[in-house]
Length: 125
Picture 1: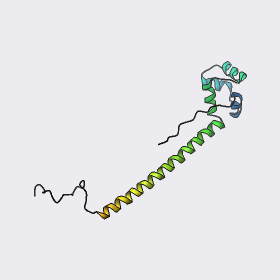
Picture 2: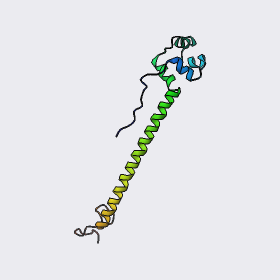
Picture 3: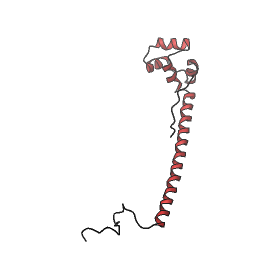
């Protein structure tokens, strides 16, 4: 069965564009969030570059990252709803088949609690 693999983005917008999308969060908040100095965040913004882990972390907060997550969640939900419907149809078909077989041969089965084959004696009687 296919399962959805979470997709890492191949490319992300420049850091300045993502910060703009987030409403230019305060440098002190960003520095504290990443455990770096404010000077480091200023350098990232000046150079419009940051470590990939930082870029990816910021990306998931932007509208593009959230859109990707929502799309993947929607696709996964639709896939699993379809799988549920398939299994439900198969289950109903198997129930109908078992019912038909029970009506054709109402002779019981060996695992019924009160089943006693005619060819075997009943012990204790």
